Length: 531
Image (tube, rainbow, N blue to C red; front, top):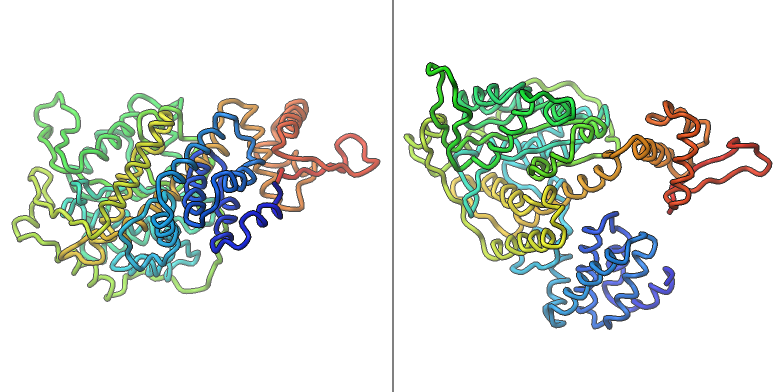
């Protein structure tokens, strides 16, 4: 089926443009295909299209994806499940709610991927929005994604050990921003450091680098709730997870793994041989991470073990590919009084008495924490996300290292958003869940795309990926052979290695070559990504 035939099949259907969009925006990967299949199945049922007609439409969408028969069968299973699950009335309601304004809470959502843009500032609300806006307003290179994840990491420290999610999760979050040089990563990180200092809360900011588990334990004993803002996070990963990492450095990863899950439990660190050193338990350590890295450094620091032990699943990774627009302006070295007062007020509005507030600052005391409530329909929506996660893991057990914390992260972000909106009596609404799941989904997209592009299992695969990146960077004009041989990651290759990789990619239809008539050898050849 070509595009014209697809349009003809669904002509007259009110949502046909969205159906085309579902297919057009389908990112590479089977997990994304399952989302698309599910969405199209619901749309099909709501518009009274036959199963056969709609499956033909969807087949047209993935005909160029080169899926295996097994992968295609999984997509069809996802499509059929969505098609069979609802009668037309329910399907139509689901479809309409999926594309409704996110500011109008709904009571029932069943489609995995939503339409909310979590990095649109007006969608954030509360203290979350105020801090994000300030970071952007004071940035010479404003990046809304990095401003948002920096704010979430700061709020994880501000509200940590004071509130827990409706199911009792702590509010520590591990946020990572990935982008090339000159994307404004340093400003977002520095802004939350300035904010904590100007608010008279320097303890909220932890060390920017750690070399061992002992260093982490020292920081946690000093302040049981804080955020560690780390530059060059990829370099840290290489040091603690790479093949050259020492056993001493690997203890850093182990500590971060433990701390993520101990924010509502006791943590003892490691026993010391020296009786004079403190080995008493720390109650509810709530440590958040905020790291930034370039794609190459970040994915170089990731190993198979990082997926197997759940370290990557604990991270929320947001990449930015399009260079932000720079702006002029004087540097702001002091936080505005209005924002300082808003942060201080939010901190004091927690429903705790004075003794309970003191306990928050002492790792040796078990703090009293406020359990946030669910709003109408919010718990049901979150359970749908959790069920989706469990169903995916049942089909793809090897995805545990990516998907294993998706529902948990969604609930943490939703609670931070709710507390930022009303610290005195926070209620997690369905809009909070949808907003938060959109961040998690963006992270899953980043991991799947980045791992495929940057993580390699051999030198040949590394060379092929470098070739594809150079062609992609060249854009629609393609790249000449002479320029390709000078590209990053390609220029060190031997001629026969380059020829073999070009042949492999061309035969696999991942790229195509056009040659000027009469040109000899590789002269006059340009390379393009296959459409």
